[in-house]
Image (tube, rainbow, N blue to C red; front, side):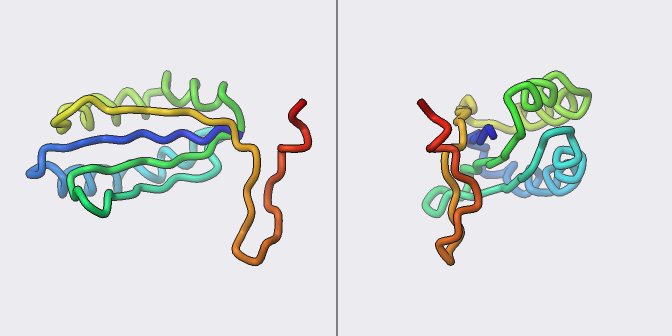
Length: 112
């Protein structure tokens, strides 16, 4: 599993527009092959900073999304609202546990 974090800083006057745009796009993004989870987060101290948190089955699924018509609509429109360049990180999921302590996903033992 691949966890993708994208940090975006917007001009303050564009934050509401971005939230509306994301509302319209989120169903199309989550329906992309391999996309398992999608969240939009807002910084607790800087209200013009947002992070998307998505989980993908494999890196190839994320790359296919980045080459898709959906991404080619979403990214240029979003990028035009930025006040600073976006930052993005991809991570391999090693372990996930829910509040009850039940292991939801454990790949640590698979790592050599």
